[in-house]
Length: 203
Image (tube, rainbow, N blue to C red; front, side, top):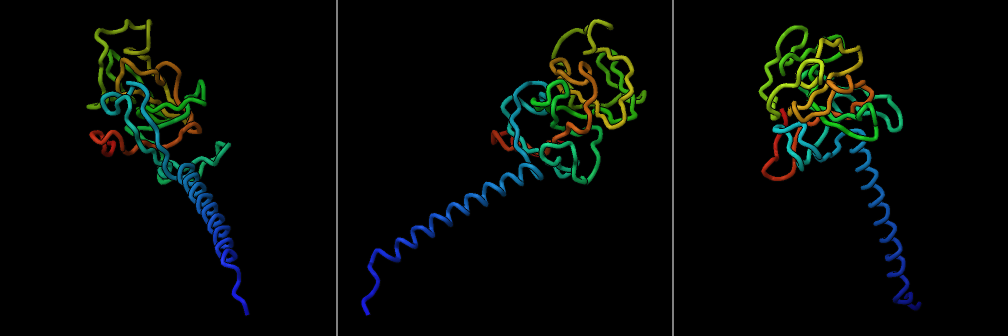
């Protein structure tokens, strides 16, 4: 019996290898999308509103496990490990325009009352100790002119978070456009991974 032509089996191998490569690529893309949707997402810091905790150009990871990941194209959320709490650094969709993602620090949760007097933040009448806060703009905005330095007592509605940037004089936050509904939360920032000098966990 004559052996099969020399080019017969290699042609089959070539087609099989191509199919395997396509399948491997599809699996890799699918896995990457699952990780991004349900576990971890990467973001880049575009502004100085969280200085000095986060600087312009920092790249960071956001976990979706703590609060529970949102199901795509809905506001339904999977069960999380815990609820957001004061001090968490959170990435969320900006309520006035949900196509934009913001990152701020949670100052108060639903049912708590926030007030700012002469740049001092108080929650439920207790002045907060905030070693992360920076006041890089000199002077003070007169009361009634701007909520930046003097913000009257505000009760945070249930299911909302009051968010503020660490760089208090250069942050567009809940003092100006109100608390953030929990449905807009993306996840909690937990680590920076670039540049190398900035690698570390966020507290």
